[in-house]
Image (tube, rainbow, N blue to C red; front, side, top):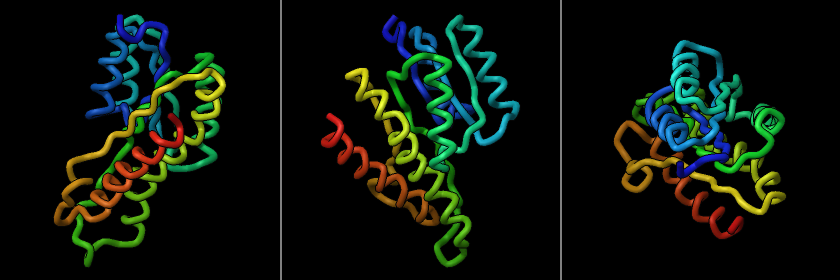
Length: 174
C-alpha cells in the first residue's frame, strides 16, 4: 500500500473533500488523525468508516484556526501516533455574501478558518517534520483563488492567499 506506516493529519475531514481524502489515505494504509471544532455525527461517521478499513485512526476536537488549539492538537497526535508524516490543510468554510452585506464577523470567520488555520497547523507540525528530516504538507485551495467569484469575496481571498502561502512555504521548507 502506498501510505503504509505513514501518519496524516487531515483538517476538515468530517465531510466533503476532507472525508474523501481521509478515506483514500486509509485505503492506502495510512493512519489518520482528523479534527473538528465540536464532536458531531459527521465526525463519528468518518471515525467508523476509517476504523472499518483496519487502520489506526482517531478524531479530535480542535479549533485549527486557533494557534494554541492547533499546537495542543498536534502535540496530542504526536503522543498518540508517535510521528506525523503528512498534513493536509483542508478546513474551509464560506460565507456567501456580497461585500456590502458581509459582516466583519463573517469575514473574520472565513479568514480564520480557511487561512489562519493553514498557518497555525503548518507552524505546529513543522518542528517535528524538521526533526525527522521529512514530511509533506498539502494545502487545499480552489479555482476561486485564481479567478475570484462574485459574492465569495472572503472565500476567494483566502484561497488566493493559500496559493501564495504554499509557494512561499515550498521555497522556505524545501
